[in-house]
Amino acid sequence: MSAPRAAWVITEDGKTWNLRKFETPVRIGRSDDADLVVKHDTVSRIHALIEWRDDAHYVSDNKSENGTWVDGINLLAGQDGVLADGSVILVGTARLKYFFDGVNAAQFAARRGTEG
Image (tube, helix red, strand yellow):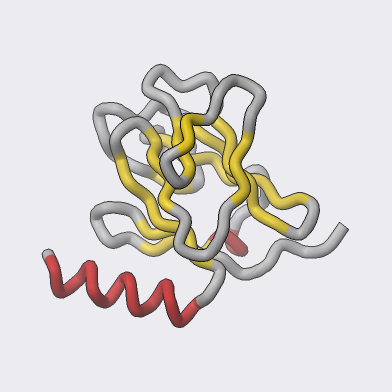
């Protein structure tokens, strides 16, 4: 199995998370025990998971109350979604953006900073 590629997730508040800093699965949720903390009312304590396998990152819902979507597709129980550069992840109604290209991540983060 290959080592996870460099990848970043950017939250609505502009925080940039480097996925290489975490063991997989990476836990997304509103709890301080999550790896990627998203403080939003529609996000469960540990809402979703990001895993590395078959040379790609995949996201899955962790039995959340408000669901998880990848690029507009609702992930059902036991289903996961492969992440591509620029993928949009919705956890509840909180919008996250996934990048494996560092230049794209930096440009997006810079735009978020100037847009408010």
